Image: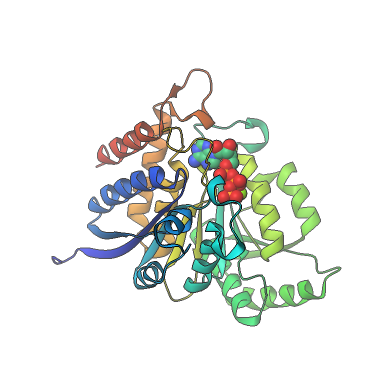
Length: 338
Ligand code: ATP
Ligand code: MG
């Protein structure tokens, strides 16, 4: 590649349902935003989930694992659908996703919940909310993954507003006492990050009462599962929310938080913004390409500012568009940036 140009290998895993529709759009947006920042991608598309079961009889073939491991980042659409729901466990599409997370050794899952000024269903409580849940992903808070998730929280808080809230149940659970001890010890290494602690029951209540008080929330697997679903509903639609799963060495895995939405698959109705924003997280948290990431985030705001909405976020006075057209509007908005 020519001097000054950065090149990354990205594995694309479209998967099932609306996955292929939203991934093809996110790929174009990634390419366009990258080209404006001197960043080039080579994409390799591989089968996963139900699509892969139909093709080769496995939800996660060896070739897909090695392509994913060899790449700089992995962008995933969605996995699963009615067609495979009765399959045995090892032949379920979702098993492929669990195997993929294990193969990539991703130990923490980042889920931002940002309410965009252009659109909110619950304006009173939600306006201005911009928080990130960092969830320990392995379920067993062994020393390594726990330390990893905590370190990640600190780094994430640094990239954001410098506040982190650790959520546990240290007044009841032994594991939480250990967790709190580690968080507190680590906090000493990051004096620029402000640390607070909250019990999980209080956190669940505070998220609904006053979500604006949070910047970064870090917590274990089970509490994170519950709190991130709760946080996602503050923003209104599942079609808007991206996620990142990170390891400390290999490529990260980036995907929308929604599923394969079989009820609307193939109808050009899916909201592609969650996947487009996952591509922005790929740039920011996976590759450290913050400028290109910002271009994508701004382009999403640009398309929303012009009033374009897919069905899930439509309201009176806005312009209803399909998946493709929304994608084209985001692309146009990347193009119009200087
Ligand atoms: P999974 O088990 O894979 O997480 P799920 O059962 O939670 O899937 P989803 O596939 O996320 O369900 O779909 C839930 C609802 O949200 C469906 O009605 C679907 O149409 C809608 N939905 C999901 N993603 C989108 C999207 N990108 N745009 C519009 N609607 C969506
Ligand atoms: Mg779900």
